[in-house]
Length: 115
Length: 114
Image 1 (cartoon, rainbow over the protein chains, first blue to last red):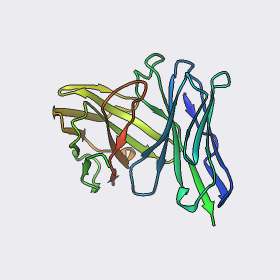
Image 2 (image 1 turned 180 degrees about the vertical axis):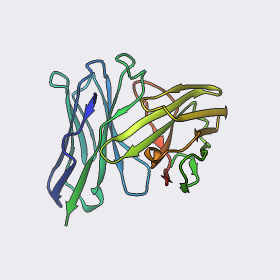
Image 3 (image 1 turned 90 degrees about the vertical axis):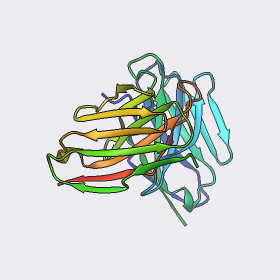
Image 4 (image 1 turned 45 degrees about the vertical axis):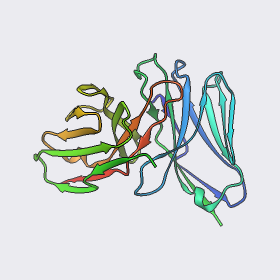
């Protein structure tokens, strides 16, 4: 049973507009959430994270929002650039709840930013 | 960039043959991981290590074994490769667990089992 869900396999956005990538989780024991970005033929690279004591974390053009009551997080990219075109993975972890503290990843969302 | 080297980068093998993938790090990180990435499945944890000779299973460990005899090296072995093990394999490392843990990934090994 999937504990981290990214229900949109793909997203297409115009350059300069906002990209919003969504992630839902089922395990209420998760207390740390991350976003990774992956280009073809490369390994995933860390983008931004948030702990459960916060509801927002911002780093330049990237902002992650966490809604614990809804078990939902989102990644906002503003403004979107063609170089942001990649697959984005949401990940979560928590010492309790069966994951043994390991990161559990979603299936990914492929973002395409069109010039 | 984190110093992680995966070898080989590409491998084609036949069903039933043994295969070993190597991950080498120069960061002296304690934790090392093997993930596989498949379309429609994202990244799934195969095995991980929390120190020399200390390893444990992840969510998709069947058919795989690992060894870590040195801090810097983490080997993934497919004892008898099957077509279902055709995948992209990523090694990852981290210096800590839990809050503020951050995995650094290698560039991956594309394995094809024919």
